[in-house]
Amino acid sequence: MLGVTGGNLEGGYILDLSTPLQLIGRSAEFQHIVEVLARDGDLLITGVPGSGRRTLVRGAAQEVGAIVLEIDCIRAIDGQRFIQLLAEAISQAWQAEKVQAWVAENASEFFVWNPEGKLKLLPSLGQKQLWQAFEILLALPQIIALDVKQRVMLILHSFPHIRSWDRNNLWETTFRGEIRAQSEVSYVLIATIAETSQQTDEADYPIETVQLPPLAKDVLAVWAREILHTQGLKFDSRSQALQLFLDAVQGHIGDAMALIRRLQTLCSSDGLITEEEVQQAIEALLKDLSIIFESLLMLLPANQVHLLECLALDPTEKPQSKEYIQKHGLSRGGSLQGALTGLQHKGLIYNAEQGYRLALPLLALWLQRRLR
Image (cartoon, rainbow, N blue to C red; front, side):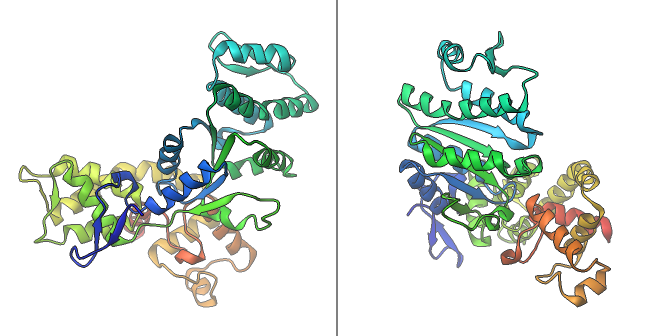
């Protein structure tokens, strides 16, 4: 297996040099994704933002030679918008004249090919017509794959978001039916880790799940060293620079990469990263992110903000305990559970398996410094 293996490098891990940097610590998951796609499987990939979900999927698509189509489901505020996003993504995989021919033969009452080179849904369609357009469009990826003799991979980011308007799960059920039916199309649903517990009936949910937990500190240390090595940089072994870096990012690849980029702008001419430089990079990065974090809190319900602040200041594996609720003035029962579930779905905290800790370590640091 490619990747990080047991070894004797400062009591940690050694690197298999055949592993691309972006796959360090994720090579087992990557190989599994490739194997599933190669046998015409479909996937649910769960993890928090910055855990490497998109990197793995895009790399796997390249490995199996698939045409990649991507949709951000957060942009789909209703069924009509979802169809439009789906139409634009699918039509990009085929020659314009072939899309136009398909419209003329099969879907002229629902779609039009506009001068900008996009497949557009006709305005003012009724609900019945929208549904017909959806069903016709779902058959198109298979047609394209057979025509170009190449697998098509449709990646749906934040797929569970469609439940905000698909109240009866009709759209989702139909979509999953296509997942089972199409032999040349692979569907990859990307969601937060809360999605893992949403579906339990394998007969109705025939999708393999790949979970991406935080990287272990030893593994992330190897990854960070290799990334920095490509830039002629390294942590000063005489200081606590590496440990300070690892404590700040807590196994989160996205936050680690952001901090490394900042370190690249601060490092001295000798290429050694000191403890002071890591601290300076952390402070500067938190300052830059403060506007984003403030905006994020403004979008959350008050009970979720309160709980998020409590978990940042006082981490616990048992936020539902009587002692923790009393200590922090949390609401009992459904309100607390609703806040926990809501924060998990947004990818802001991990579930019980990971101890309900904040999923974005830099956000946790920012909250701690803001509240103390």
